Length: 467
Image (cartoon, rainbow, N blue to C red; front, side):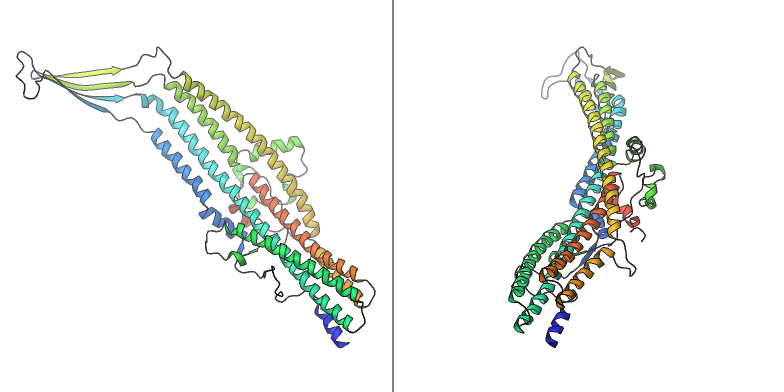
C-alpha cells in the first residue's frame, strides 16, 4: 500500500522535470530567449524590406537634387570663309571666327515647380519608409506572440502528458493490486495517448512559429529549434491619444479615462481628424503624393515653352572683333504638351481619390483597433485578477480543480472521467488565459500603429497595468 501512496504523490503536482522521450514530440526546454524590444530593435536596424524603403528615400533625394540643378551652358565655335585643308587660298574673302555660349533658360522658370514636386516626393518616400517600419514591427510582434502562445500550448500539452503518465502508472499499480478495474487503466492510457498526440501537434506548431520569428532576427546563426520568447504575463495599459504638438513617449500609455473611450461616433471622428490624421505615416505619404501630383501640373504647364535660351559670344572678321548676342524662343503655335498636361491632371485627381480612400480605411482601422483593444483589455483584466496569495485566480482555480479531483479519485469519491475532465480543463484554462492575454497585447500594439506611433519608440512606456 505504501507503493500506491508514493505513486499517487508523484502525480499530485504538475511535473517539473524533463519530459519523457516520445516519438514526434521534441523537448520544449527553452534555449536562447528574445524579448519584444530586442526583436523590434533587430527589425529596425537590419531588416531588408526596411532597408529597401530607406534606399527609395535616398533615390527620391537624388531626384530632388536633380530637380534643383540648373542647365549647363552650351559652348559653340563656328568658322567661315576658310579654305579646305590642302586647297587653294580664297581670294577676296576674309576668314570669320565666332565663339558663342548659350545658357538654357527653361530650367530657371521650371525649377520652382520641379523642386516642389521633388520635395513632396521625398516626404512621401520618408513617410512610406516610416509606415513600412511600423507594419514590419507589428508583423514581427504578431509573430512574437504567435511563438509565445505556441510555447504555452506546447508546455501545457507536455505537462498534461506527463501528468497522465503518472496517472497511468498509478492505475496500473492499483490494477496489479486488485483494487481497481482494468477499464480505468485502459481509459487513462487512451487519454494519455491522446495527450501525447496533441503534444506532438503543439510542438510542430511551435517549430513553425519559431522559424517564422527567426526571420525577423538579424543574427542568422540563431538557434531556431530552441528559440524562446520572454514577455510580461500581465495585460498592457490602453494607449492614449494626445495632440501631435505635445506628443511624447510618456503619453503612449495612460489611464483608461484619458483614452477617449465611450465617445460618440462624431467625437471619435473629430478625435481622429485632430490627432491621428496628422501623424499616421500612410496618410502623410498619401497627402505628399497628392501635393507632388499638383506640382506636376505646374511642371507640365511650364513645359509649353521649351528650349528657351540666351546667347552671348564674340566674332572675329578681318582682324575686327565684335559682340554677338541672341535669344531663342520657340513659338507655341501647337500645344505639344496637351497630352502630358491632361495626364498630370488625371494623376492629381487619382492621388486625391487615393488620399480620401486611405483616410476612410485609416479611420476604420483606428476605430476597430481601439474597440478591440478596449474589449480585450477588459476581458484580460478580469482573467488576470490576482487572489490573496498573489497568484492569478483563474489559473489557481484550474490548479485547485485538478488537485481536488485527483484527491477525490484517490478516496473513491469521483470517477476517472471527472479526473480526466479536470486535467483537460487545467490545460485549456492555461491556453485560454494566455491566448486572451497575448491577444490583448497584440491589440494594444495594433492600436499604437493605427494611430501612427512607433512601436520601437513607445515600447519602453508600454508597461503592465497596475494590479
